[in-house]
Image (cartoon, rainbow, N blue to C red; front, side, top):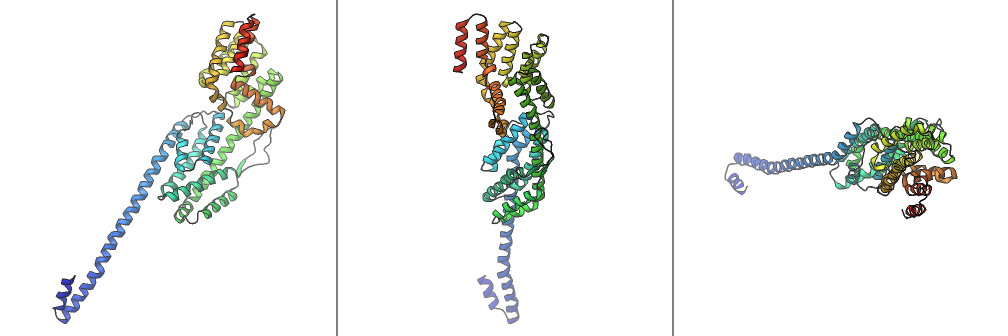
Length: 405
């Protein structure tokens, strides 16, 4: 630059004027070129950061999508399993501190036999979350995005109303989401994150899709929970009839429950119990087929079915087969305790059962079926059989085994 200035001074006035103009152009042009290069590099860095975040979002969501897509392909569903998974997924939503941890929990969930409509609704929410997450490059924005969306989903579930047509006997009222209240919740959450300008902008752009996905999820959730409640009413009636020794009524209610939910487990066991206690010898082969089918479909929850097989064989006079079935039930109950009692999860939402003596009858009979107590204790059934055969010492030992277990 100094050489250029010296050269200008050595020239004439007109040349010096032209030279000064050249110097000004150089002085302005060189920084501008540098600024342009810096701007291009910065823009390239921003684009690269967003592309990297989009790739990361797709990678993190893929394991969940794969499991959901696999389960959605199966049309049949287990209503008990569907409600339990809904509870577990929502529990993870409330307990996990980040979207990453939530996705990890979802990717390890077993979605087999869950209603496809439920999975489709949850996937719709995940689609919106993935696109929103893909826009958040900063870790602080990602954390704020999770706080907003997780709280919004849990809150939206709480603003679903049931029409006045619903009642305890027929809880079939129409479900509707209070959209105004849900919108208010979202506005409040956005205000709390007002300093996250880009996040609020991104949420505003996807607000309609996010709320629609949440509305759909809430309605599907409550529709299946209502269906489960209707199933529970039939099973409760069968449990109470069994407690009263009204085996015909127990069978009738259990079979209605099976008709409503063919893949459920509890009513199948109650129906078999009722048919055994009704004592129709000609019905024994059909009951045995029913229990064998249960074992085949639910090998990890087979202990109660083997117990009932043992009772059936004993009533039919086949003590050897009865003993084998009781022994198999006794061997499996400890191993299957976790899986069997896991079925209790939906009952936690029906805590009102513990507030009355009659509700307690339902819960206790359910627990005894799942844990091998009372009638469903293989040790007590073997003890009874041994007493009848005159083996008092063996019978006493089995009673002790029952209490030890």
